[in-house]
Image (tube, rainbow, N blue to C red; front, side, top):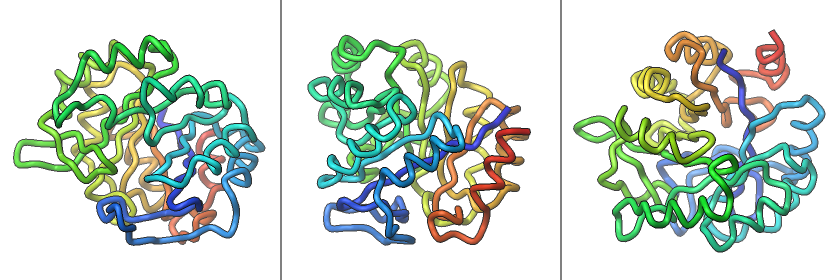
Length: 251
């Protein structure tokens, strides 16, 4: 059964909701800047037992807030953003239930099995989440790295999902082309994930209402969880309330 998964997105040291496809080294188009710090949201999620949420550092300058969130709810949140084999253990020790990795796994644009084995040696597959966030291409979807700026040659398809699923605990997949736009989910991608993933997977991108939770549940046969960001009332959104999402998970 599809579950709502919470998030804490960090950009330039603040909790924000941005338009994912706009993220550049110089900044990003921003939907919402929170007056609260990351600990506020970690405590809120802990209060309602909203497990499996992720803290994502979008670029530099976010480590202090990330560690604050992880220490507020130890074991309750995942962390991603600049994770590699040298720092993964630090974030787990700081309280992350899992670490999320993408860009480190690519060497000059090519997927590196050697790097995957290196980080697995630090975390174990049971605490490793592969972020296969992607952009649409002429043939389907390809993984995008470096804050979704670089589209790699690795396709998100049944073969990739099956092969990589043997090396991690979960997948996290942002549809970067629709992330933050509140224009609806990528239905074809959700269908693919529901069919091809044999491990837990969370989809993010474009969700705008409670109806999208129902739609993801239907399209994926309950096999894909959903993150809602910019449309959520706690991030200034008008599409759905946190209370509705809590009730959905409890049904």
